[in-house]
Length: 446
Image (spheres, rainbow, N blue to C red):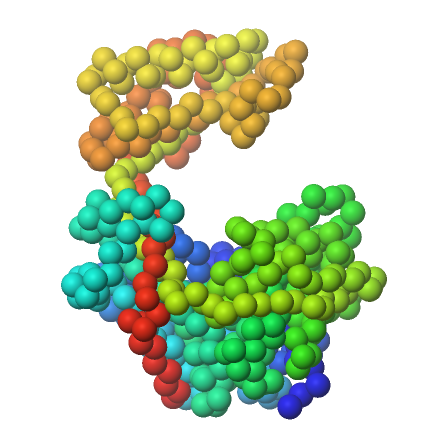
């Protein structure tokens, strides 16, 4: 057993910095690199890609990344844990094996994608009703794009036990990417609740990448060299005590405040933070700012996990479109309001009805509504309008009314770009639960 393991997280979401994980690997020692690519909507995008192409459905950025850090994986015994496999981890693995000429061991975890089994599971009594509102799944049953279970983190430990250098998963939990290697290295059992809770908390703190090293920080002016921001590293001990730090020489800031802000992210009940593996008491632990970009965490308490897994379902919920105009000159705000009124009246005259509409004045009230007082003089305003409806043609009809006001509205409308707004599908989110005994996971390594 190692005295300590170092786990760096180089990806907080699909679209995060392409250089951050490379820098994490090359700027200092790591045992594990974790990479979080998935959000609720991401899996629906991947599922639709796979329906069009059976070899798609995973984060292709990950392939390029592995090619850049393959020497470190092979020479430094670095292991990579990621959910980049999306809804097609085996296709992702095959592409990686082709690129690396089969010189690397890759484990695939499957079982989280229950999209093909939805009807058979319903026949077995799973309602899939909305876990917050109680709405019936019948409302969306014929509109579902994807359905993925947040499976447990011991699948990652199993994959490492089988010799994986890269672990490719689908919808494991975000903190589970860090918990899995902790359980493997230290032999933690699934009923050692305090240790499992510590690994979960550590993964929760680092899951959003630089959001705990000074990114998105309230006192952003105090963060040094944000252009060179370092991504977080967990230093975990066998007893579940750990530190959050980053490589020396990198920008950013790790302090009690930056860590606490991330602890509060997506918390829910602070005494009962539910993960697939454990329920964590977020009021139990102590944080100590050690200075020099290091925070120590001790005393994490956990309790037995629930008997259900959360399921992330995405579904079709109609169409949307938005367009914007720049209005300038004297009385810009009044002209923007007048322009919006013109467009909505013209659409009504054309017989268009929408489920929802939005009118925003960017920089004035779009984010905070009426809580800010208007400045004395406003010389330019960006007017943004949006609609939502089940009828695609009506949404596209909205897009045809934006440009005409440039010559048939008040003066000073100067900015219009990107062509007519086109209808886009709305992907909505449906959280639900499934009994754990109905979810079967598999792990294999090639």
